[in-house]
Image (cartoon, rainbow, N blue to C red; front, side, top):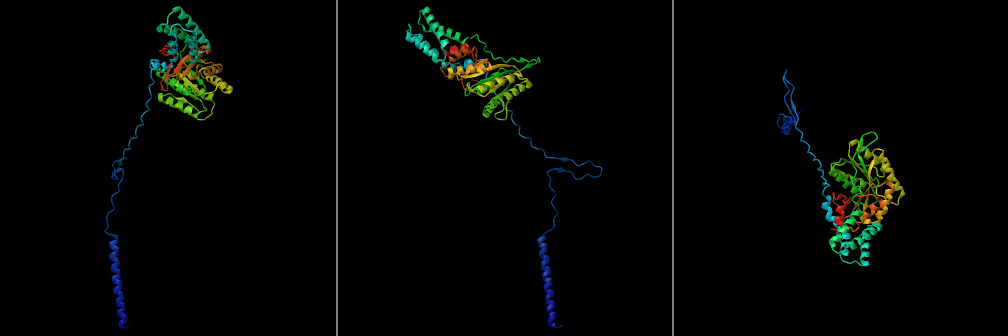
Length: 389
């Protein structure tokens, strides 16, 4: 081989040695120093494996945080029944236009025929009714002549006595909620059916009546048999929830109201309730089909327990139209009592006299405002005194 060939081989060897050394150094720098892996971190505390014959390792789980406690709903305590009329007497006195007008006329002294006509007109406008008005006019004429006086206090005493007689304090105004004894000899809850036309405040009255019964320590179950309006069932459920009273309702709009009423009474029997209040859909008195439905509801309820009360809710401001409503409802379901709503602030207080005289059915409750406890048992003397206050 020539000298040039040997030189070329020597150069190649040197290049290979240098390249290998550089590669070896770079690889070591990239890998870095060798270190031990870090210890595993675990959320649990685990002992090392035991030696032979030692007990099993103990595993302790971290404590779960306690779920926040849901506060129990605070139930309202309705106002006691005693004293409601006294508290509401000032409101009832707003309808004292009758008494104020009559006293103003009667205290004039010797009354002319025009004065007597004005008295008669005042009574008729107050919806006392033609028959009762005629009776009251005759008695007032006679008494004032016998007394021979125009003293306002004496005339007021005569007027109070005659109005109280017309209102008739002897009528039975008790809401009969004593347990009924069934054919099986077992006590059944007293059942109360509430009826009326649209817009009289019927569902609200049922809610307020439930509060009144709770205030008297009765166990109550509500039945939402107004199945045409979901809002009515929702409204009744709200009333019940405020005082801890269960509500039986149908989740299907348009369900058979008689079936809901039946289920409500059945639930009341099973729960050992004292009273079952059943709300019904408002209906016009001239709709024969809807009026017949009320009779069906009452009959179906009676299969579970006798219906003790049928309350008709009347708007006091409707006057003689309310009288026509009362007559038709009474024919359909045998009304046992009247609830007069919206009696505050109206001059139509005479409807009390008219409706009782026509139907022979007592006014048992009066609604005197929008507050939850603005429903009170009707007391004839309180009512007449408020009219003449």
